[in-house]
Length: 189
Image 1: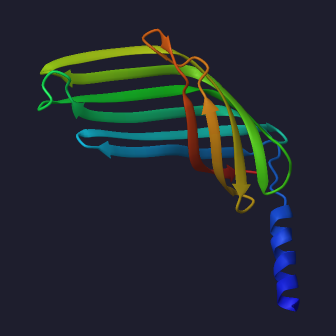
Image 2: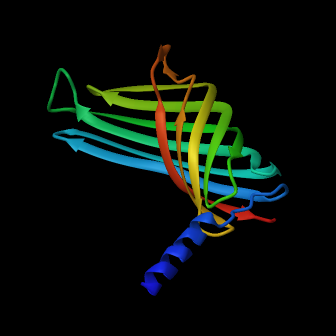
């Protein structure tokens, strides 16, 4: 019984430990996601990598910059000649400022985030033997909600859900939700 009590006390103390994010420190982060699917001749794969760096400008408030690179590839049978496979490759780049507000001083820290910046995409496709190429850029606006679990005073595991308010493809708007997993490292104070 004594061992169980000690284990419970240690567990509670580890959850209630403080993870201080004070003014003057830096937070570097790396988020991303990946997916792959296959159904008959249809194949799709996606890989997104999003590094960032933020300066703590106040207690639990960070301002910084994020970069994002997404690679997507699709292969599928063509409509008119099912023997041929169509292939598309897409490269997306995003860069811009980010503002993140953490809540609380415990290991589990929820946060709200707002980021904006320039989005650029390049699309290449081969369909029925004909090559297509297009690219465009736009302003992105992404609010996000997330949760950090600080494993120590310096390292955290992160999960966030973001929504692009300005996501469209050739004039057609559609929902663009993203779930990102990653980690953060606190430098400095």
